Image (cartoon, rainbow, N blue to C red; front, side, top):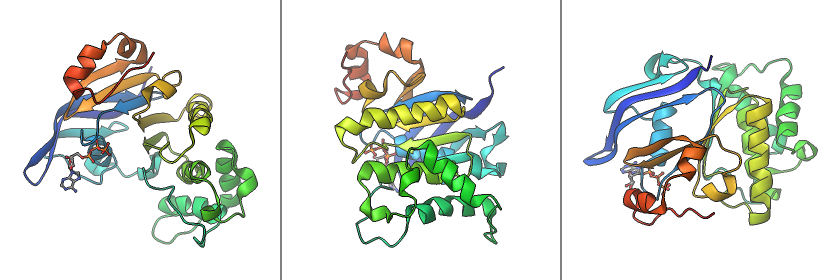
Length: 248
Ligand SMILES: Nc1ncnc2c1ncn2[C@@H]1O[C@H](COP(=O)(O)OP(=O)(O)OP(=O)(O)O)[C@@H](O)[C@H]1O
C-alpha cells in the first residue's frame, strides 16, 4: 500500500495583502518524483516553505507523514536544497566534508553530538552523489554543479525520506544537467527517496519524473506525467499566459 507523505487540504496563504496561494489541495505519496512547474512569482517557493514549516498557512491543513505539520517533530525526514546554495566563492573556508557534516547537526540537536558513524555516513552521502573523491577540497573551488551535489549530500546525510529541491540546476552547464537528473533518479529508485523538484526545465527532466504539478496561485493540474503529456499547449497558456512551453 502506498503511504501519503505530504497532504495539503485547501491551503491558502498571503504575504501582507497579496494572496499567493489559493485553496491548494494535493498529495505526495512515498516514492513519487514530482516536478512542480510554474512561472516566476506563481508561489512555488512559498509552497515549499509551507511544507518545510517555515511559513504557516492562513487557512487549510498540512500533514507531513500522516501528522499535522504543527506537531511534526522529525524534520530531518525532509531534506531541502535551496536555489542559491551553490554560490560560494573560491575563498570560502569550508571543506566538502565539513559542509556535509553540518547536515548531521540538525539531527544531533541542541548539543550537536554527532553519531559514531558520522564519517561513514558522510562518505556514503558523497558517494551517492558521485563526489566522494572531493572530500578534502574547499567547497568554493568546485563548479556550481559539483557544489549542488555536495548540498544534496548534506541533505542526504540526515537520511531523509523526502528531498525538496528548488531549481537545483541553476548554474549547472547544460551538458551536466542530464547527469544531475540521472543522479536524482537513482536516489529516488534505489533509496526510495521521494522528490519534489521545482523546475522550469520539464523537458529535460521528463523521462525521470513520475508526477507533475502545475501551480499558478492554485493547482491547475496534478497527476501522472503521462497525463501531463496529454495536456495541450493551449491549456498551459490559459494557466500560465505563455510562460511555460512544452517541447516535444
Ligand atoms: N517575503 C515576502 N513578502 C512579500 N511578498 C513575497 C515574499 N516572498 C514572495 N513574495 C511574493 O509572493 C509571490 C510568490 O513568490 P514565490 O517566491 O513563492 O514565487 P516562485 O514561484 O517561487 O517564483 P520564482 O520562480 O521567481 O522563484 C510573488 O509575487 C512574490 O513577489
